[in-house]
Each structure stands twice: as C-alpha cells, then as structure tokens.
Image (cartoon, rainbow, N blue to C red; front, top):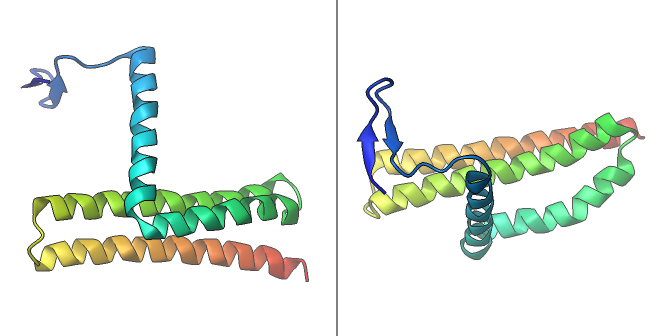
Length: 134
C-alpha cells in the first residue's frame, strides 16, 4: 500500500483505499482477528469474557426494564472495550521497545488505570441496581 499526502487536508491517504461494502467486510474480519489475538495473548481479556458470559444473562434477568438491563449489560461491554484499547496500547509500546522507559511505564499504568475505572464503574452500576432490589 502506498501512502501519499493529500493536497487538500494534509492527511495521509491510501491510494488503494477501500470503500463501501468491501471496507465493511474487511473491517469485520480485522475485528475478528483482534478478538482472536486478545483471547490468545491477554489473560485479563479471557477472564472478562468469561465473566461477561455469566453476567450478561444475569443482567437481563435482574434488570427491571430495558434501562436497567442496558446499564447492567453495557457496563460489562464497556470493560471489554477499555481492555481491548489498553491491550492495543500495550502492544504498541512493546513494539516500539521492550527496554524500560519511564514514559512506556506511564502509558501502561494509565491504560491499567483506565481498565480499573471501567471495572469500578461496572461494579458501581451492578451494586446500585442490586441494592435497589433489597
């Protein structure tokens, strides 16, 4: 693939840029490859998927109405989104260098903190919904 600088926007663009349905189909398969890589290389992702498989049906059962169900389920999906982004960032940092650097460590710590916040948010949502049922 050859990249060139667009005269209008200053952005890099691909000469063989995909469009329409072709891009949608390829993007789907790239996403599947991402899920496979996350499952293979990321223990935290595997643990969160297993928790998701158990908790999503429970969320639909416990939630009173669509709003509660959506909160319970999407809070779990949000954890997966943040975990995938954290894993992607860690892979990029490791690709650049395995040598310890303060900024590399900071980037990884920030990604970990983001996952912690997402988990805390999910726990808070689940706790509040369950507390309301008592």
